[in-house]
Amino acid sequence: MTSEVSAESPALSHQPCGYLARAWWGDVLVAESRAAVRVREATEDPVLYFPPADVRTEALHSEGRTTTCPVKGQARLWTLEGKVQAGSRDWHDPGGVISVDGRDAVWAFSEPAPGLEWLTGLVAFDHDRVRVEVVDAGPGSDERDTTIKRFPTWGDAADLIDIMNVRPAGERRYVSMTLAGARRPVVEASQMLGQAIVAAGRHAPERRVVSAHMVFYRAADAREPLEFEIDELSAGRSFSTLAVHVSQGGRRRASGTLLLDVTAPDVVRHQAATEPCAGPHDSEPYDMSVTGRDIRMVDAAYTDDPDAPVGPPVIDTWVRFRDVPVDPPLHAGLLTQFTGHISIAAALRPHAGVGQSQAHRTLSTGINAIGISFHAAVRADEWMRYHHLSTFAGDGMTHSECRVHDEAGALVASFTVDAMLRPFAQKAHAADDRLAL
Image 1 (cartoon, rainbow, N blue to C red):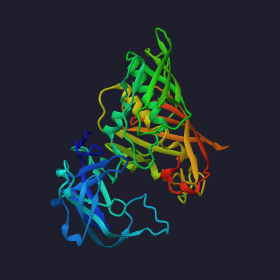
Image 2 (image 1 turned 30 degrees about the horizontal axis):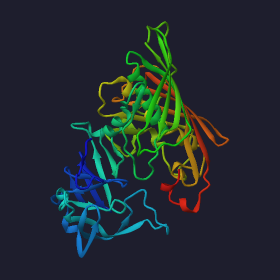
Image 3 (image 1 turned 90 degrees about the vertical axis):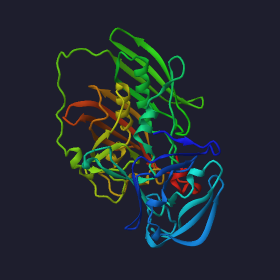
Image 4 (image 1 turned 30 degrees about the vertical axis):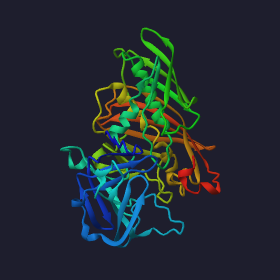
């Protein structure tokens, strides 16, 4: 998705939402539009603005108040009557109260700043109190593929594809684009490995990555580009071996070794038996804040709730990107990008009283190393089943052994994840998890 940046206010970008957008005050639909605009200030979460014709103005009550934003100008404020449950999953109330009132929860800029005249009259809602959502469905898609995503979203699958698609930046060097979430602008470990796989494919386009292992030893900031430096350790007639170092701000963040192959005909072929599970359309949709990417959790096994029922250390997840260019290294990189998402949850699942909602609050978690082997060409635009099995948890670490199958059951990739899981020594100033690393 492309966005426009105002010349008068370069800290502000806007673009069409691209999806049907809705705003709910409790059970009351207060706005619905196919022409909503996604507006973002630097370092802030994006906000959806609705055309006034698509807002139920009878639900808005003016008490004559206004406010002034130093970036966007002067706005009128409206109130929604009554109290409802907080619209945002990230709502933090020190008193533990989850109901919120609608005072000044709606605004529209009557006198926008110079250069922002397009903002005039567009209506926005406080996402922390009003539930704002987008209906994530591709053009003419099967109704079973439609999911609801809570706004603000991190971005679209097109944004993620753009980040994974590293650019040449000199001999054996590549650089990534950036898009950071406002809450925790930390680069995912599996993203770095996926980008390294794409870089390797660009370096040796006649070969494909068959094995890769990377260790992540420093956190990287998602607001800054990453640099990928390739050292060709060997290049034979069949195989190439590459060392890839990931750097940011002049410091290395991760290092990996990748094996590439020209591939050859089968001498023999077999694969481990595929354990049965529900298909993608018989599994629970899950919102991971990216539109254009479909995620389904088999048996609704994934949850971040520490009070959820315990179960075996297994989570099956179906993943599919709706639209990916014909680019084999990019498809492999996108498969890899998801390898770090679920393995820690699988390790926590057999244990009562712990869940990923505690991460960066009372639990210190992070991916230390990922190893992946590719057994076939990847189609990230078709359903991929990630079978996550945690085989060990203890000594402050977890280990998972995982497989990726296509919808027909063919084994596409296998990967392992080693992750840290430790009590978090929380300082007083880090009570908000946005401040904790």
